[in-house]
Length: 184
Image 1 (tube, rainbow, N blue to C red):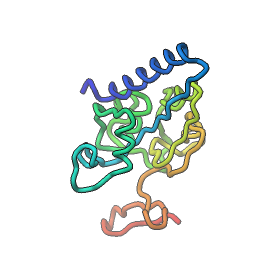
Image 2: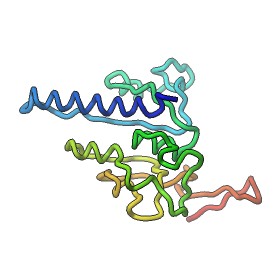
Image 3: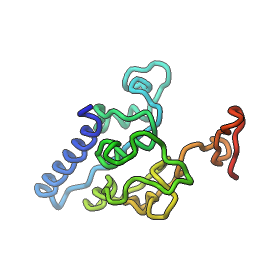
Image 4: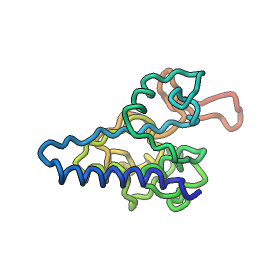
C-alpha cells in the first residue's frame, strides 16, 4: 500500500531535480524533455506487448516505452475517479475523499480545489500542458474542469459512459438493465 502514489510522486520529484540540475549546468542549450502520461482504464500490466503480451501488439506504445521512462511501480484503484485523483495529486484517494466512488456528471462534487495537481506544477516549470481523454474528476462547475486546474487545453469528455460510435453520453437503466438512455 505504501507504493500507491509514491511512484508517481517520486517520478515527478526526480524529473524536477534532473531538470533543475540540467538547467543550472546547461542553461543556454537545455531543451525540456517532453513528458507524456498514459493512464488507461482497465489496462493490465501484461496487456501491452512491451511487457510480453502476445495477444495485442502495441508497437507505438512499445516505441514510447523504449525511448522514455516508465513508472511501473504505480498501482491504481479499480475505479476511474480515485485513480485519476491519486495520479494527479500524488495523494491516496482516501485523503481526497474519493476512495469509494466515481463522480457522476450531475454531481456537485469534484477533486478538491485546494489540492494542487500535476499540470499546475509543470506550468510553474514553464511547460505547456494538455489533456486528451477522460477527466472524470468533476465537471458540474467551470472551476472543476481541466482547463481551470492547470491544463492549457482539454480535448475529451468529462465523465465515463461515452458511446464509442456517436460520442453521446449514455446511462445504463436501473430498472431495465439491458436498456440505455442516450443524452443527445
